[in-house]
Length: 371
Image (cartoon, rainbow, N blue to C red; front, top):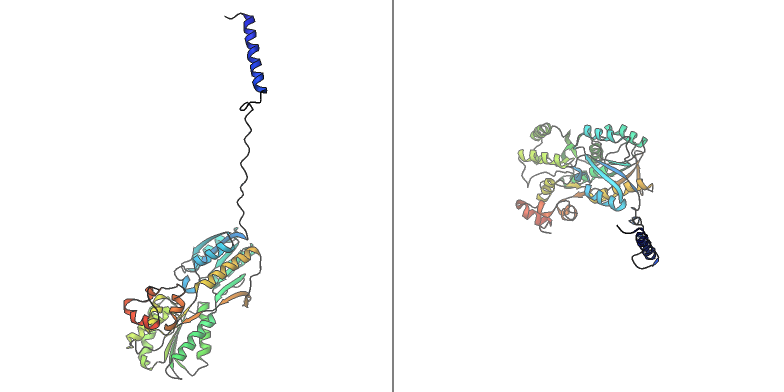
């Protein structure tokens, strides 16, 4: 063991060295700095309006024919409202499904509902309830009382264009016509029918038979057509007014079964620019169809959504049945128009339209594959 005096001296020496080191100011001798908090994020907040948007589609399988395109809408809204969230729900053509979707949205934090109603009469109550909770409602297509704004193609123009095209194509000034309308339960079909009748009734044409097709029982339409065509065979008919392309297909099949050939087929109208119908137009078995361009309506709906969220002006609208409405122009399409309309817009490609059997007809109509 060390003597006590030596131990005391050793301890004093160690303490002196420690004190000198603490005051020397040499590098590495200072206490470690206290870590600072990480810098706050400098990412800019989204500019423009924000909010939650729900799109209730009528039927995703046919929305294109009605002029609404999900991808175009989403792209435009992302540009106009980068802070918005969008979800889509598809009723698949079932009004019960759509009313169930609407009921779950009432009282939620959804800011805007974009609604393409399956049956306008079944959604009015829900539209009122949504607005009571502060949710804005944009309606696509059919008019719905209480909506904030509506975007629709001019259905009167559809019927007018069809009827005028049919009368021009008839080979006599007093043609005998068959008329097949859409469902009386569909407000769009009712409007189209009234507009077509306004033109036909003001002409010298005679309507020898008229049928309102519900669309749910095709055999009834087929039976009606077969019966009428026994009294008025294809060679005595001046033409057939068909409200849409599905009906036009049924009519053309019935005319063929009654003896009409592509060369002797009376003119038949249509609407919706379905692929098979566009092919028939090119082939010459269907007189025309009506095209609802995807871009204008889908983009305008997105712009209106952003405006409602921002509380800004909706822009130019027309008051229709008490609702501010954006009316869009439908486009009648005959064979010579196909290339400049549905093909130019990318709605259908020339390769989709021009089957091998239609190669010559496509060339004649100016629809060139590979372009």
